[in-house]
Image 1: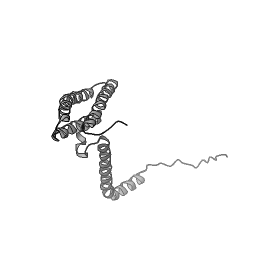
Image 2: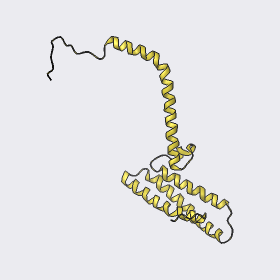
Image 3: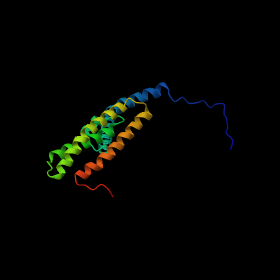
Image 4: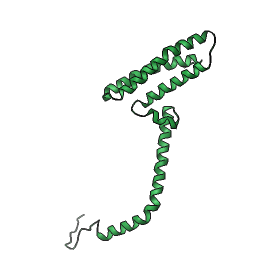
Length: 158
C-alpha cells in the first residue's frame, strides 16, 4: 500500500488560540463539579488504604500513625506483645503458673524495650544493615510469641 503525498496537506496544530479558549471555558464549567468529586474519591481511597494497612499490621486505624516507617510492622508486633503481657499480668494467674507468668513477664518486658530501640535505631541504617537488623528482631519476636501463647494456654505448635 502506497501513501499519497499531496502538496496541499498542512499539519494540524493541536493547540491553537481557539482550542485553548474552548478548553478554558469547559474547565470553568466542569471544575466546580469535578474538583469536589475528585477530593471525595481521594479521601475514600486514602481511608481504604489506611484501613487495609492497619488490618495488615494488626492495629486499629487510629493507631496507624504510631507504626509508620520501615520498622512499623515490627513496632506493631512489639506493641501487641507488650499489650498482651499487660493483659496476662492483669489476669492475676494463681498457683504454679503464676511464677511462670511472673518470670516470663520480668524477662520479656526489658527485652521488648531493647527490641523496640533496635528497630528505632535501624531506621537510620543503610538498607542492607536495616534489613538485617529487622530480620534479627523478627527472629527474636518469633521466639517470644510461642512462649506467650503457651502461657495463655494456646497450643501454637502443629
